[in-house]
Length: 224
Ligand code: NI
Ligand code: MN
Image (spheres, rainbow, N blue to C red):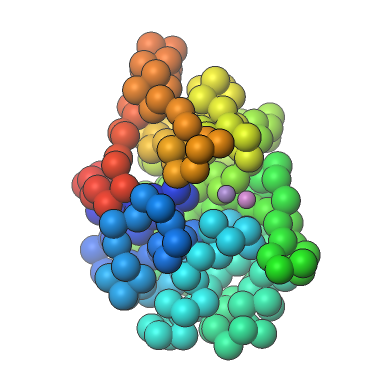
């Protein structure tokens, strides 16, 4: 599969037959090299409703007809704005044409424009090729990451920016609980409050665990 880091927490996953967007914050994202029109997703997955994650999800859904898949309250909000959306909840997995989606807990908050938008989540996506991908969304470190790790993760996107989420040292602990084959750090160097050195994070992870860290610059794609 091809993984593109759009910037911040926004990623595109391209499998053999499907394209999926997670947290497509593109318009107004100071580091993004793409435009929303560059993407033709089959589905848009959202971790929570904050503007830097909801991003362009609603206009992309309206343009392409791709459903937004998110926790019930956030999906209902997207429907109220004219997007196609499928609401689920923490648990699962739920089956779709492109694979399965499980929403996991995240330790964070979720609202938009004064609306409470349900619990914040992480996402476990299992592709038809049976690759398991965890996008942690915005979260602090929590012990139940060990349970998510039991699923057998091929790839994890973990926030390292601090201030709103885990910092790099907490993310190293998260890697020890999740035991993914590969980690891609996200949610850093987008705003002044979340400046971090991903090379230091990589050095710590690779000295203490078996996990490989891939650092992608916004706009870059890697094949996994
Ligand atoms: Ni957030
Ligand atoms: Mn965020």
